[in-house]
Image 1 (cartoon, helix red, strand yellow):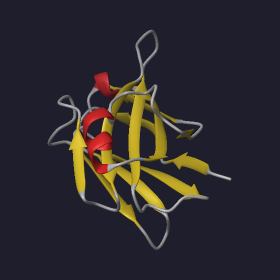
Image 2 (cartoon, one colour; image 1 turned 180 degrees about the vertical axis):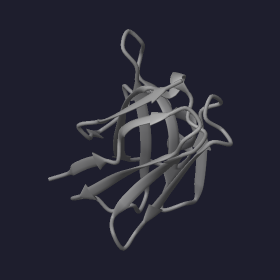
Image 3 (cartoon, helix red, strand yellow; image 1 turned 135 degrees about the vertical axis):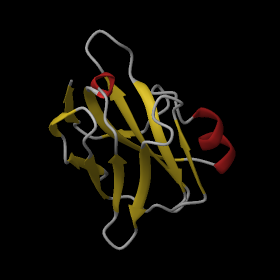
Length: 129
């Protein structure tokens, strides 16, 4: 049984940092498309970052490039999202997502929330100005 548990959210001021964690059980990172999504009130869920197959590649949404970093610790079966220089527009519920996928599929469709096998419960990030 796959389980994803996010943690690390909170309330911060603009310019500060947070690190989100996604502890995964029941999955291996081999050939897995591990992603972070976020959803703000009244908005669609959007893909923020992806890491594939333990680090073959990482991609980011344009809105977070240069500020967010996705990584994973295979020994801890945990995926991280380091978020620096946070802005009020980063305020959202952040979700970890996982699914087995080919390299081509993950690289092409990682931002599509409809193509996710497993979701975490989410962790709230609030950034005030």
